[in-house]
Length: 427
Image 1 (tube, rainbow, N blue to C red):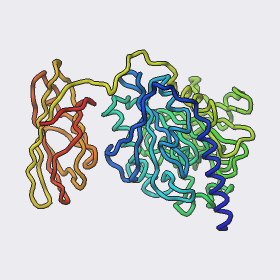
Image 2: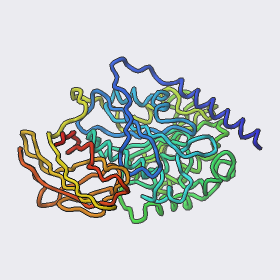
Image 3: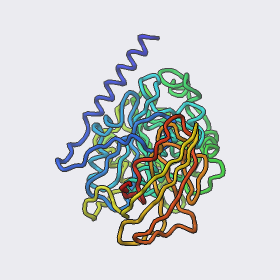
């Protein structure tokens, strides 16, 4: 068994490296990948990198692109075509790095009980925090957020669509598995029932798992694109059908496709449309392919499915500026507690209607209450949002807000203030 596992690990590593060789060459003028070290609540202990194209609209769409087991965010950036497509179409790309060890190295947690609950903890909460940060820092449109990923990242794609249907508009899962396929950590590859080739639930059972994950949600569900190689033995091709059954049931559609075609040689595509004609589920069977997706052109097909193929017309901005501001902080600390008063000044020439102030809370501090604003989350990168009586901030005017917090020794003031995504000066 140990020999078999080592062989499987070596195979997975070789396939991952093969995928990294498929990226399109980047233009010389392209922006650089940037690491964000403090982006908010991070129970998964993950790393975040973001790619912000030089040319983009004021409120660009956000694509979360996730690597396979043993990979990393920077590796998926270098080895996939999503950043080059971001240069062309002007959307942001978040590249999370998984930090939890599984059968093939560091993988995204789709197995734990916490990860299967909305806001339950682990990697899903960390990824949702990254999306919120992209909105606060770069003006990313929270109504146009999309997920994609390969292998472990493809699994997390279907996972996030299940847990946060109100946040994600669509997803493209390469070599993934249905939501709740893994019973626990012991079920994760290699071995286990999910990827052992014997997983078979009814469409109703699969659909119920998604509905239970977001109980009470009645809004639109994210559209789903699925990709799998017919010769994939690491994540068996049979799991594509299980994913199809899950998502068609979620949409209340028959498992019989509305249409099928071959958009490229070896790409067999099936589509499931709702009564209005909108394709809600799309599945690609890649003939003869193993555990090696996405390959050339597949990222472009995913971006087209998301509806992000309109080039931006606005000039380069880094980052978008919506206001000018200054923040001063006054901390009063004792034992394990403190209060912090923040004075926000609009140093711009135009009034601000509706504001949010984001800042990094020092490590070990937790907000327990506040005044003149609402605060969320309670640690990490916190966002203070105006209340009804102080939503407007005239040019040259100031307002005071504050909070109470506990601390474990670090009673310092917050850092990295930004007002409506515009960086503020301090003092």
